[in-house]
Image (cartoon, rainbow, N blue to C red; front, side):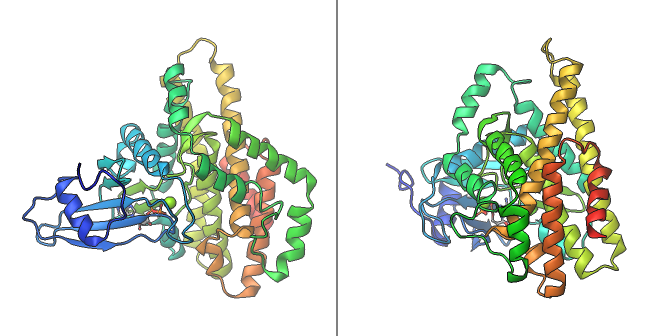
Length: 400
Ligand code: ADP
Ligand code: MG
């Protein structure tokens, strides 16, 4: 029996040994350095490298307990992450780290070190812009989502995948944090500025029409096993540089509505936009870029989705009339989920730096309100928006 046949949490010395003996990524003679670089509150992420050659690798290990609170969390999430990274790697090879080795008993994923790409959320907060971002992320979305549906895949094979990717505990987190608590604070975990308390009560807690629409999106999230989705595609799961993007951390993956991924991307870009609008209103270069980027992501996604559809979907009933209806539903869901993402980050307890880093209350209070208004509009009007400019114009109206 190998010393790695039962799960234990590795320290930096264990990681050095593991990367030679199990991953066989380095030779026994190599002198290695290791640091733990995890910045999330769930897993442990190690960077291992040989300073002489520059060769490096990342090991992401899951523990049975959350590193933040010590609460148990289903370790199966690590297998799901390794499997979806392989599937996405085959469908969109330039956009995810390559998997070198995966070990189910140790819950350890050995993968390509993508440290030359930087966290998109922090880059945007620092005012960086990326000319090819809309092009890259829309390709990633079209290439990874449609091919995993049963419009393209064999029906039986797809159902097998639905079962392998059933992700009860991580979906449960989303169902609560995104689709329940911001509208119905039953766990008392929402964190709201005192000045915005009344605003939240009248616009969210007492807005019965909105609650019903969120209910529909929640029900769809829980019951529409449409495509293999990343499940947590916020701007801290996307790493970027001048050359392109890498998407990491798909441990929330499951078979769900593809609009959830598209919506998360779009929703998170509104945080960057709102942040700069209030903190650096004169930065027109960034403000123009973020507006164009949101617009282009929507329009390019529709275009690439359509091309992919024509290339891959051949079943007789899924003809051009079907395609039209299918696409509009995906788009409406995308806008709806962009709305729920925006609202949950402002009201719920998993905040984003784009909002919390704004310390000046004269900026923070209206910033939170415009975001909530935009979230509501995206949810309520999701069937009437059909082009990128319609949502960017809507946000400009709300800002004005
Ligand atoms: P968690 O699931 O705990 O949130 P992440 O997958 O988000 O963990 O990783 C945490 C951090 O570790 C990331 O924000 C990133 O800085 C770093 N990281 C993760 N994977 C890689 C990788 N393949 N290459 C370089 N850095 C990585
Ligand atoms: Mg994570």
